[in-house]
Length: 187
Image (tube, rainbow, N blue to C red):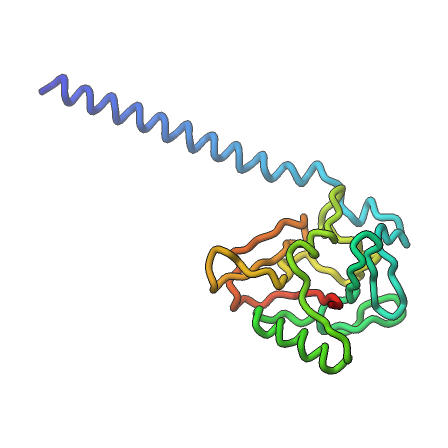
């Protein structure tokens, strides 16, 4: 009986040590993950004024990606482009309302606007900088936020896909009833 108690006590101590080591490893991993962004430059520090990268940005509020041919509205939904800047207040809507907004914008303008797909949002990502990882010379009012995309989540019908503009990461586990900003592209 004493040997059994001793074995159980030793096993418990070993399990406790393993859990402690596992927790330490997780903490180190978590803390080092935070450092990965400290080593990446801030986009505001590396972008040269007027450099639009792959985009041809026009004064009518449009930006055309020379690589993909995709035509983007340069401001967040809810804003208007004038004198080289975005004016007004961006709207943040739940996904269904963002999709309806794009349809209303299309009806009012006579052009077919829609929310970009996740792959299209990925083309905006600058790989050499963060905060936000989108060229502000092209999209002057882009904020650091999760931006809605039209890509459906394959995880759950109550979820949608967003792009986090701080670093360009994609997420498909955003609740559709959360209000988020979004961009518009011409179909």
